[in-house]
Image (cartoon, rainbow, N blue to C red; front, side, top):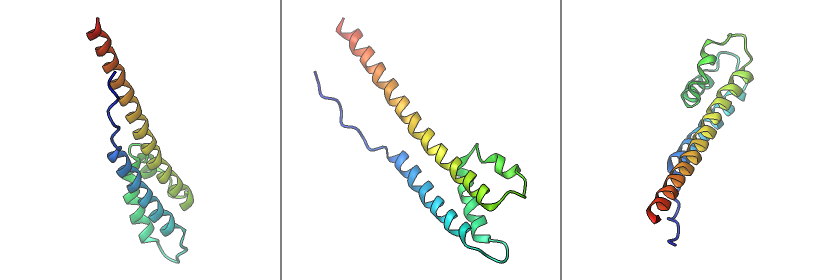
Amino acid sequence: MASPAPRRAPRLLIAHAAVVAVVTVLLVVLASRPVEDANIGAGLALLATLPFGLPWTLGLLLGPTTWATATVVALAVGCAWLNVVLHALLRVHLRRRAAARTAGADAAASR
């Protein structure tokens, strides 16, 4: 029996997680600094975080403006990390399905 092919590094998943980690740190650092006026930096970081949490972050755009900053930041970051987890689970599912398809093809060929 042939040895299994070496596993490739999940480059896209690693890049996705790395970008979300950087944006998360940026957003948390900027949102945690107290300011007297509007926190423009945190607002820009929040806007950068929202696309990584789509479609779950669409509710934040329609949410009430009375939500605390910590709530908005937690929801935006949580949605972005939820997408990273879903990305990883999709990758696992597709690899298992491809392995099952290969095993089925090997079994059919050996008959």
